[in-house]
Image 1 (cartoon, rainbow, N blue to C red):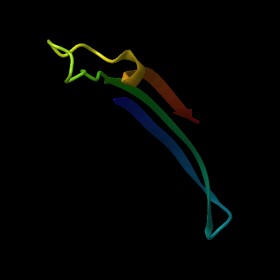
Image 2: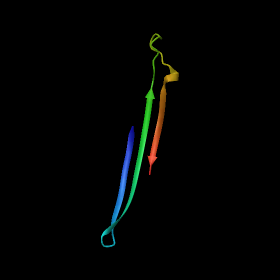
Image 3: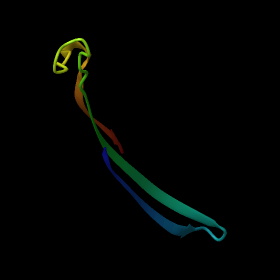
Image 4: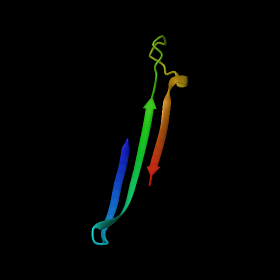
Amino acid sequence: MAGIKAAVSYVEPFYEHSLLEIMHDMDINNIEAVRTVRDPNFFGGGFIDSLAVNYAYQFKSF
């Protein structure tokens, strides 16, 4: 799993007792999962393809 997170904020005085803030967040995550399953009844522990998982997923938030 790998991820990047960044945030930028700009604050400016606004009137006498107020502040104006502009903010932007960015978040990117990459997730990879691999699972293999061996058959304990098969000599040498052959793989069971129907139970295996192999996927990659990316999530972006701006």
